[in-house]
Amino acid sequence: MVGSVLLTAGCSGGDDTETAAGSTPSATESTASPTPSRTPLYPTGPAGCHDNSGWSVEKTRTWLILHSAQTDVEEIKAVTLSQSEPGYDGPLCEPIDVTVEYWKLTYGSPAEGDKPSDPAGNPDFYFSMERAQQTRLRHDGRKLQEVAAPKKLYADDRSVCVGALATVTVGKPLTEKELPETIHLRDSGLGEIDDVDFRTERVATNHLTRPEAAHVCGPDGTPTADPDDVPSPTAEPEPYAPTPLPTDFVEDLEDLLVPSPSFG
Image (cartoon, rainbow, N blue to C red):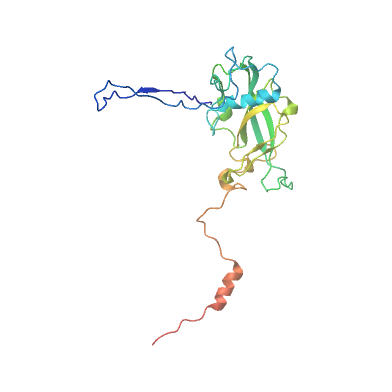
């Protein structure tokens, strides 16, 4: 959401003071400097809007990135297209076509014997995509618009093999040829970002919600074990878990042990 900045300019009259010689009072006037405004990214013209006629997909996408946001970074409740701050980022003179889509992702682990293709060692997962909801709208920044997420897609009782993806796209809905072929789940504990590889430049923003336990999902997308019994491949070890000593080290210690002297 783009926040508002108010320009403030003040003018304060000086105190009326009398000179030592008793002359007539004089007034001193001081003017405060106005707070500088942000540099307009998309300033408005005489019509009170920003001329976007003839914009390319890339220019439209760049503007839409400013206006696309999610109300909750953990679990999507709605995709929000924000309202413009007049003079800074619009509004646009011509509304643009936007498509908001929600996708159901069903994950499955690679078949036994397959090796991860990621050089960093992060496990790869197969997945299938199914469109759960599609909303087409016109947006020019004159008002805030929200597209609520399907509750079932983000329900707490969904399968541990099911994730979700929200997309905001310039123009028409995504075609099959534009959908991602790969999705890499990174180690979030190390600050890495999941990689969704779309085959188009029309996607302004997306939000991936991971499955709860993709590492226990079989190739057909169904759980094969209790996630509590199978740690994630990228999970960090317990910080206070005891570390067993190597067997050869224990044997060396036994060789060094000598009887304690006795005192009578």
